[in-house]
Image 1 (spheres, rainbow, N blue to C red):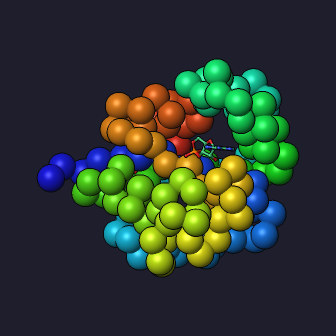
Image 2: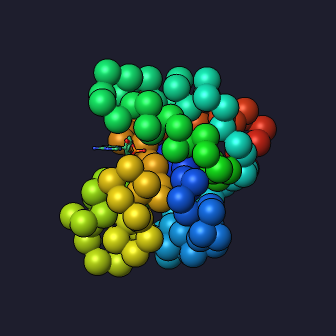
Length: 140
Ligand code: CMP
């Protein structure tokens, strides 16, 4: 399996509770390397573009409001099978359905305030990474 990259966000509910380090420890323990990372305040435009695929969903407005409510940490993660590995360590979107030991089971507050985002495929990851990082900011 070739080395792959995925895009990750530590969301406002987690940064507000000072959980960046705890979440990074779980990411690293899962065998992923954090090869780029920055703490930013997302603009409404950035959040709307990022979640454009969910524009028609009833929770879209709430989702954008939440993502700009406090700082987030955007990251590029690298490793073998990184997309799947990261999805496994995040756990299910709804924390009540997430497996024991996963980030969302341990830390998420609700399906909306679910602490982390991860790309769903390598193709999506490339698009999401390009929205927030330029090539020279990623150091593998
Ligand atoms: P994420 O992986 O970032 O991708 C889309 C996000 O929409 C998801 O995590 C959740 O935070 C959010 N989301 C999904 N379903 C709901 C819902 N029913 N109500 C509110 N937010 C949701």
